[in-house]
Image (cartoon, rainbow, N blue to C red):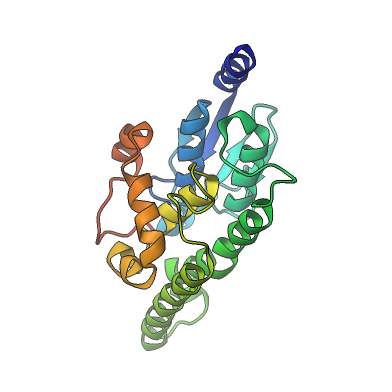
Length: 232
């Protein structure tokens, strides 16, 4: 008990600065820090809204993308999956990731990388289709096909995971659950996610309703079946 209390106190003493608008890829990181109990200062910036917003990120992330997390040490981390994995390992007492040597660790890492590689990456195109083509007709086709690809990737993941019981990695909520819960609110929105990923649908509903996150969701990403995230 003393060790647990000391760990909680250490987490509460840590202060982070998180760049990213509500509903963006910063949201699962903010949710994780909320469960961990660390202090978070937020800088709301939406790079998909134009060059002036992207310029605000240049000093912290030359890629001009969110999320970006300034650690208590002053170091900067980018890439949502990397940040979530690091936080899980940094605060093992929070129980948000399988430890090294845990038989679930391989699948945890597999899906934590799958999500940004197969799904999140589609939003770089969707946020600003002119990056790849100036033609309006081609842009419309690109938006349609990327939405189809996202839905297909969710379905493929749903067919390959073990039956959630009650979460993707077992009895406790994990970084993977937070990541899927946020991203499944994006295009093509939750209604379709529920259809293409019925097993994971049960898990995300649990995370949506987690009382520890109720105030956080209300403030940073209110739930809707139909509303995608900014930039989504």
